[in-house]
Length: 631
Image (cartoon, rainbow, N blue to C red; front, side, top):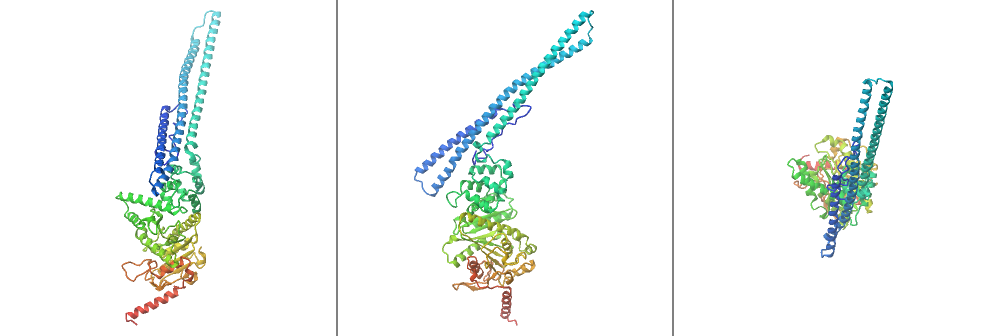
């Protein structure tokens, strides 16, 4: 049986009443017949619905209704029509199997009743004969013998004949009971055969279709890769039924590697790019929290799944007075940051989302399924979804605009920048966590998975791809650690709180030579403190081997003035005039980052080394003293 109506029409029908060895006719055949009749009635309803839907599709095709909505309606109806027939056929097959089973149980029950009557008769007869034999033996022991020897001999012969006759009758009744017991055991065997035949019929291809070989044992023993193979080719209805019956499969699915997921997902694609097939839509609807974060799945599908999870969570939170205020604030912040979603220009794509154990999310400006230049924007300490997702989404769009500007590329669909708040960043007050690599290691694993998932998904689409990672503060350590497990075409480290000493130099990362960039402004008061407290490396130091560039004031190639950063940031407070940080618009930092992430970084002047920053700080200090009239 195949249907999304698995709650009312389970693919595993009501099982036959279990046979009891002492009672091979156990159960009520009339009840089984009623179950079968109900399935037949439901099949009739479904065939009627099939006729009505077919007529509706024909009427729409002949009408004047045209356009995208008409095509979507016809596509949806065409997807339903075959499933209605499959459901009806499955129910009819169930009914046949159940009717046959009930008839066989009824035959066994009737024969059992006959055997029970014969057994009662035989046992009563045997008991009577045994009593008569016992009475005869007792009476012969105590009666007086006849006077004459002739009479005595005749008397003893008569008793012997009586005993022999009774013994023979007892043997006959005993044999009769043995025959009844043998036939009873035969009935038990017939019932077992009937049970087995019914079970086989109810789990055969006519009823379960492609689900028939997917037994519990097979699914439980499957690896993530073999599970994907099993799921490949299942219809939307089969997937719906299977995942409702075995929700634990979602966890095994989530453990699959991105390349395998990408191939499996692409194999289910429908005819229209960006529109899920019936099977894909079933997965999005049933396990959105898995699909929304499953690396290798197309990003339009992840967007739909995560939006579905968000909307459900918001509805639940709104109706629950006990909702955690932080969670409610996070959900509302995400809803605001998503805005019009994929309808916006450029699109806002919701590509990662989870609330447990703490909120994480990633929102893209641009379309990850089509963009050829993709940048991950990785935040640092003190970042959280509730307080920062909107600002980072805006920063992603600002970097995207700058990338388009430096390349003079008129095609906006080529660029996508991801506000990647998909790891647990340390609190700005948590000095211990900031100074250690623990959270960075966990975040790096998530970022590496995301990068590998992007490569896998785009390999299946056959589109060119240039990938950059731009990280700030503590996020620079996350990014560097991630690129020991994944690869990027460009890496930019801004205001780094230090890179792990497990990474000796730029050559240790999976980034092409000359494409690792680093910058730290002279007025960044926190990056150096982070490096000292943690003992991590300054990536702007010449020994590390990164291409350093300036975050001080300057101008672009067309003479446009660019601000220098005045604080660690990455964004300056809006209520502080003349304050700027690394990701603010119209800064030298953002402009140079855009050039570095679009293949133009080789022409950036090398600047911003620790010694240059120290010299700049001395000059600025001297100027400050001079303005104050101090020597």
